Amino acid sequence: RKEVEQDPGPFNVPEGATVAFNCTYSNSASQSFFWYRQDCRKEPKLLMSVYSSGNEDGRFTAQLNRASQYISLLIRDSKLSDSATYLCAVKGSQAGTALIFGKGTTLSVSS
Amino acid sequence: NAGVTQTPKFQVLKTGQSMTLQCAQDMNHNSMYWYRQDPGMGLRLIYYSASEGTTDKGEVPNGYNVSRLNKREFSLRLESAAPSQTSVYFCASRLSGKNQPQHFGDGTRLSIL
Image: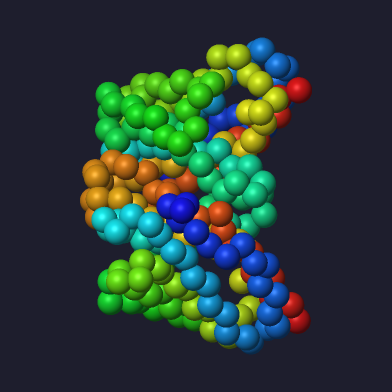
């Protein structure tokens, strides 16, 4: 089993739709979780961290389920500008270790 | 606000040539990382440096070497480039501490002919 897995999509949704992505991780000792956004041929940029109690940033909501070892990202009221690839990232408990990334989920929002 | 700076942005090499990719960060981050990204493969860790003076192998270290020159700079060297090393290379850095994210440079697009 891969350390971090995502449904690659693509997810094709109309403007205004609500869309959710899940990401599973295999290391139960993982401590930090993030969602990144990557636009075509650009670097990944932090979208939001994922906290144990769940957190929201505008139209974006992130949740962590430790028991089932997955994190989720919910996007409400999708905009054309949300079209991108969304990467989940997980970090283990050891200091200095790198984030492990999923391969990304592609979202395409159309008018 | 420079953040993480990578040079060069683009490079074409012939098989067997050597090349060093440069990365510098001005955020006083302890840890630095090199990833490669290929279609369908996602971001794969090549090497990382948890702190100045230390380096460790990641998932795909073969064919690469790294140097953590000081706290700011972390370079990636290809001693004898191969076509399989054609990729987009991203450098990242991170402050120590739980829930600290990684910040990426804008990448080096490398083609090996």
